[in-house]
Length: 103
Image (cartoon, one colour):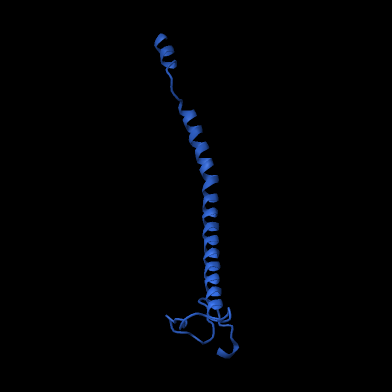
């Protein structure tokens, strides 16, 4: 009986205490991770908006220096076409074609 009492007096954590701590950490992680994902998406959106404002400001500065309208564009800019342009009726995969002229 004396050996059992001395064994119980040792310092340490029980399995239940460790499981409770792990459960609390898991709960906090389950709450925090979606918030971090939302914050990252909002940060990327704000960075994109800031970049667009920077481009618009540079374009306005160019137009002012060149005595052009703000709707003009600098240089010999032409839209690039990497893919052929399809001008036929819109056909969605797995759906009927809704254009009456195509049958």
